[in-house]
Image 1: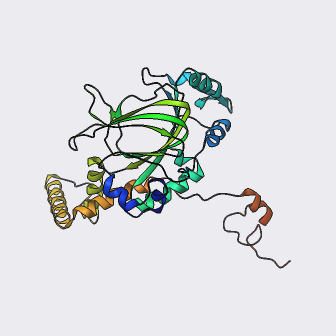
Image 2: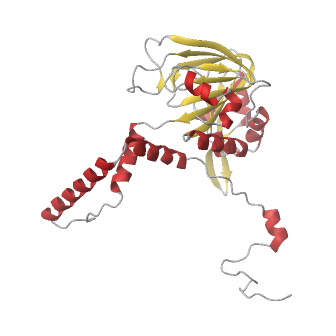
Image 3: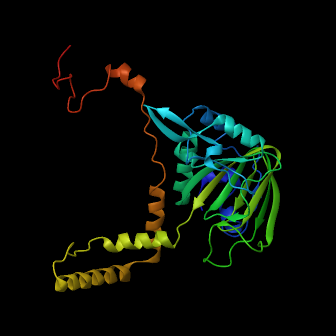
Amino acid sequence: MHSPTLAAWVGDPADFAAAYWRRRPGVFRPEGGARGPFTLADVDAALATGFLSEPYLEMARAEEPLGRESYLAPRTVNHARHGGFADERRIRALLDEGATLLMRRVDQWHGPTRDLLARLSGELGLAVEAFCFVTPPGTQGVPLHRDDADVLVLQLNGAKSWHVAEGPADGNWEHGRVGGEPPAEVLRTTLRAGEVLYIPRGFAHEAVGSEGLSVHLSLTVREVHKGDLFRSLQKLTAQGMAVETRPLDDAAVLAAAAAMLDHVRAVVAALEPEELVGHARRAKLAELPAPRAPISLSALAAGSGGPRRSGAPGGADGVTRDE
């Protein structure tokens, strides 16, 4: 595992891979504290824009669900009513009552987070997403659950007490809330600002805010599952398939089916598992936010006095003139 971006959080990536990666949870305390791309000030700024909305924002309590109307509000734009916008007053009131604020996919709308995750995803060859949790002391936002991802938790503010339990016995497990008898605990720790917790994929966990307002950033490293592999298998076996799109009679339908099976058998016979996994992982990476292509209208206006019409490389009518 070669990842200088990861090294800033967990130390030597080779040691991390050998001792922890998909084996056991661990706590890391980098010298000077780990620094994240998303801060408490960024949380404030995101809410202050007034544009943050569902599904990027949710509020939750472990013991009871919260209706979206308790923290979202509608607005009237161009004489039409649109719902789902974050309501700062309602959010603050719920935080005072012990609810947790969850900000989803920070990498999709916060530039520095997107840039860091792009580097980390490129180094790991796996898709990485970011989520921010804000939890008041003594409260819990999410009950004991399993995530379908390896998770790196960076504590940004306050402290949070974590309980991590053992992972599933095999690959046939469900992500989400853990019911019934809880699995055996394997790690109990309190994470403070600048510290990092690693939770392997599928290991059950829960956390409670312990000191001050707990704010942490969770990076979820996504691995492929059966559905991803199957979709990649479909795409790979469909390449170069010469089969009639709409056969006209029974004989033509059977001939198309026979040709399809012959083609798929030939492709599968030559397909290596590594090629299938690689295709599925690249497909997940392709779903991540694209690199920024910022627009500077100030620069555009200063350079040309306004946008040019398509097909007009010179003057407004396409004719280049000497001044």
